[in-house]
Amino acid sequence: GVAHCPCSNLRLGSGICHVPALLDAGVRVGLAVDGSASNDSSNLLKEMQTALLVHRVGTGVTSMPPRKVIRMATRGGAEILGQPEIGQVKPGLAADLAVFRLDRLDFAGAMADPASAVLFCGSAPRAEYTIVAGKVLVEKGALTGIDEKAVFHQANDLAADLLRQAGK
Image (tube, rainbow, N blue to C red; front, side):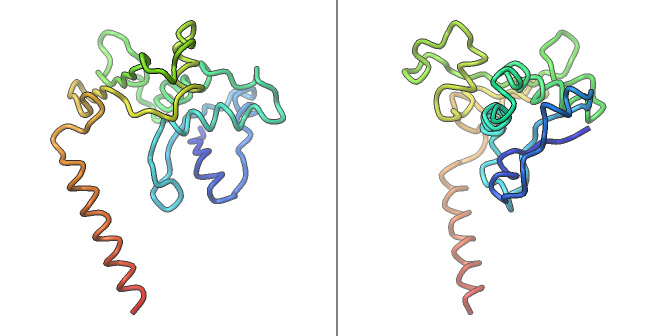
């Protein structure tokens, strides 16, 4: 299978994977985020939005509908990893779930198709809740058990130190 990282491909200028053709040929495709060297945000929703849009160029809007992108990001990745217990919400499977608030102005008028709304509207919102293996890791849009502001300041201090050292 193929782990598709469209934001990384675009940032590095390394080309665009021909995902619609791969899917048509029966290749398993999942979505992923690359490391910080080529995707600083590690934002899977942004990868989904980018995959949705970039693969419509030259192949038409029907080649990459939102539900196909959502499938690549969930069951597609699970199939590639050989982990049938993840990738879908179903009794007896892993309790992994991301929940997004769509009752904001940027989603107004889009509730006829919430799946499309998440990918077309807004600006890649952070999940309101993220649950992994039954444990809440994001609650009300904030990471649980981590002081995000402290991590932000520590990361910036470390980056500044690295830049100072590199300049010596």
